[in-house]
Amino acid sequence: MEALAALGYKPEQVSKILLTHKHADHSGEIKSFPDAKVYVNENELSADELQGFSNLVPVKFTDGAYHNFPESQKIADGIYMIKAKGHTNGNSIIIVENEGLFYMLHGDITYVDEALYENKL
Image 1: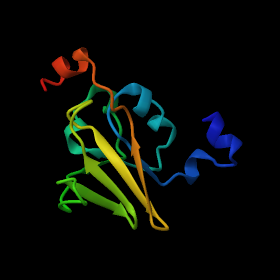
Image 2: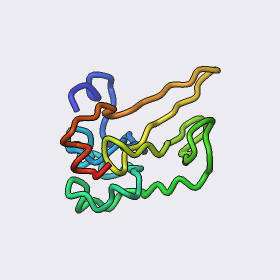
Image 3: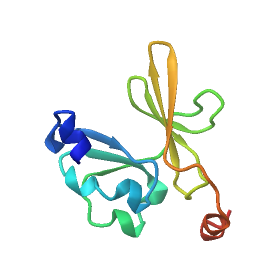
């Protein structure tokens, strides 16, 4: 929150949040943005970390393939969520297209045995 404030923004100015996955180190501050729509893979909605929020928007990945990724959802012009099961069963990647460049934003892409066992991959 301090970094956001240092840039001159207030929480109520944030209208959309794209959540890559459920883990608290990524979702822990969504409580600070009650007015924002929080887009999250529908497979993460039952996670304990996401309970009690009324501003979650389930992403169903109904827009088909995005380049070589088989499932995507367009969130806004040039912004896509990509289904990327792995780190969690509902893990997602965010793609931002801007001036001919493609930016890939991801939460955690490392795989440890514990995560693989937990997610039964």
